[in-house]
Image 1 (tube, helix red, strand yellow):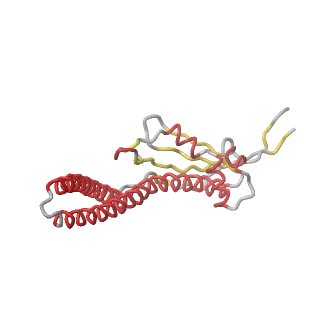
Image 2: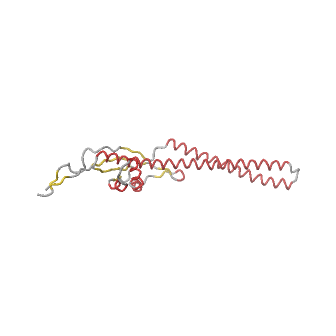
Image 3: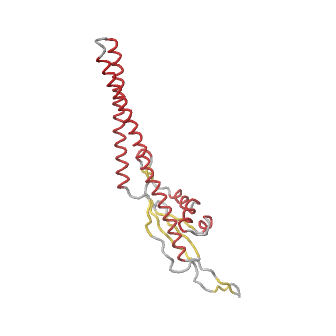
Length: 219
């Protein structure tokens, strides 16, 4: 007797990973085992589901997804299998695109957070500088009115020295923050993306495995 075989089709997209920013201006090399888990996660599948507006659940999508990589490489192959060759290509590409966007958005957010946080800190330092300058001006006016009172002048001078030291420290802090902001802005404008699709998924030329025929099961 015979049975009809249902053809399946597999399409593959290729994704290149680059280092991402880390603490103290370091660059973190991609851990492909971890990144494979991220790409094949429910979170990614949910985004793909939304992107494609498909009725398939995240679990159903992940069942047909395969993510592979060669050791010591920075490339992942994202494959999806379906009975519809067009759907296989579209879904494989969607997984690749969603993952690339996730990784790039995280890298971009790192620099944007650095810029925002450093700008807030610089503004706070600038405000403190203004407050200290006002205190210094007031003390200098008091010193001018001390009428030669040595003890009062000595006390004011001690306070002035302390305030000037604080002002100098804040100036250094503000300059360092300026440098940090500038570095982050330049890097953000010139950096290579944290990931990109090297090869788009395209519809398979033919079905997976054996050709589409009636298979002889028994005699």
